[in-house]
Image (cartoon, rainbow, N blue to C red; front, top):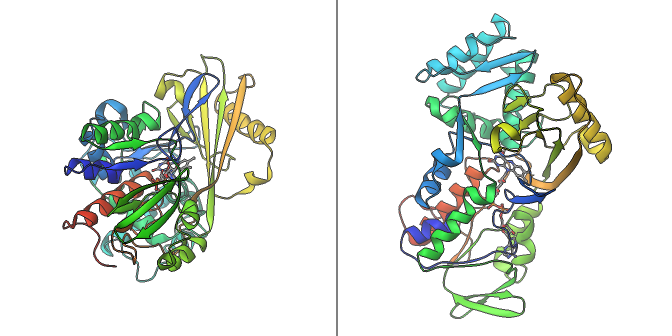
Length: 423
Ligand SMILES: Cc1cc2nc3c(=O)[nH]c(=O)nc-3n(C[C@H](O)[C@H](O)[C@H](O)COP(=O)(O)OP(=O)(O)OC[C@H]3O[C@@H](n4cnc5c(N)ncnc54)[C@H](O)[C@@H]3O)c2cc1C
């Protein structure tokens, strides 16, 4: 949708084919017990520059649709790091120095860590696992557990033992180390389909384009006059330019008839995958977490979100569990019981949830490991481009990564500066 909106904004009539009825892909709205929720708890950070720009461009006002909160990591009763409304970099220094629950040596270690990365301009001579880097930088165990690990896993969806430190450094550069607003958390006040994909679809249509839902493309063939797309036995096209913006797991089947893309398919088939589990717990309406977003250290969940405070769904708490971990050995009931116990640690004495749901996305993202090879925007076939969170770029598999890749593909297709160079 980012690629389509960017092309529509440049005056092009675009046709979007989407397999599902709901727009949004891995960040979409679903219905649970009569409530509209997301397929998993998602957040933005202020560093999502291109996403915010494109939202505004398609008429989805970020100020109205996202609630901005200054960086605030809260582990109730254990630790709190909160950035004050000071200009950068004072906001970060102050947040670390004033943090409760960290010793002075831990605070100075965190500041030393950020300064070291900044001196190196956030470039590592050689990419290594984040855990190894924390160890080499003599980061205390509690600092890793409460600060670096939760941030790294949330951004890269990969356990720190296997996560790319270079990609984590890219994220830190754009967020914690950038202007104060870049490290803000932006909590969506509407579901993810309404946040960007639906307004983007309306924008594409208003610019003479088309959005064909429930239209899965089964195959792509190359003809003398361009590319034909096979949808439900009907050949659409020819199109002289096509951007493939499917999830990486859908790519190999889609391009099976294009031998020129064999090397890209091999790359994608070589990815390892990381899951994301979302758990919804419905409590009585007066149940409220002390903050809209709360960290859980040493827990099954990593973050708890109070949907009453964010979306006006009082009593509904969602938990997120990123990446592989011991929770994968637990069945649904055990998972719900474990997360209920974690909520009870914060709100002692609350009764069991009235209902609960577990949503598992097994291949939520590719594992963002050191030096992982990601395919480029341009394919060996002129006119056929790739977009998506897995395509080569500085960002891990995130909404901003996907949006940047979509914009890059659109600009490359238009031959604009800032598009993809010949890779
Ligand atoms: C549970 C969960 C939580 C997450 N949390 C966050 C978060 O908090 N912050 C964040 O930034 N990121 C988060 N992410 C990651 C983020 O959602 C993804 O990186 C992003 O949505 C990827 O976008 P994409 O456009 O590359 O791919 P997708 O979202 O997968 O979109 C691909 C689209 O292609 C369609 N499609 C596939 N095959 C075909 C076909 N043959 N024909 C037509 N259409 C087809 C699909 O239906 C889909 O709509 C999360 C992901 C998950 C799963």
